Length: 150
Image (cartoon, rainbow, N blue to C red; front, side, top):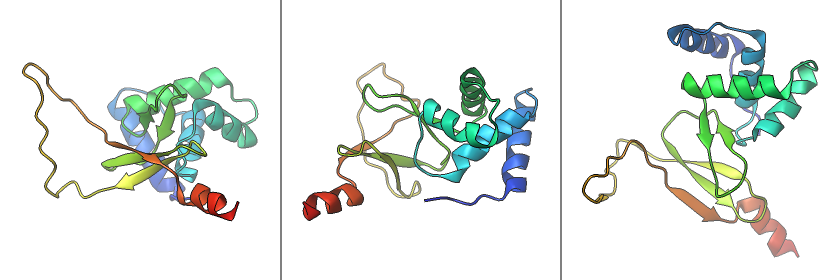
């Protein structure tokens, strides 16, 4: 499912975040960011590379990794790690959780209302939480439908 984000808005946001961190705007960074904004499917670096090459054939894997690292540092993209699989990248910067499909291995956003009362979690003494993520596992609707059809 493609998500259309106005190029001017995305480019302006990218330029502003890069400037704030002392980095410069490049065509490669803009292109990799655009690739991530096109779909909400949490691609791996390799998947970003393959998509980026479609419209920018000279881009290298190293450049894609560097661009992804920069986008994460600028707060425009989140890294999503799932078990021992490849790191995936998420352009959804709203507070949300993830659902991992055991069949297709897809990663899906699960939105929630951050203003709602959050569950109380008691951490052992000395632990200081910086961030947390709740992950759901199961079967996505497409895989469930395929299973029913068999």
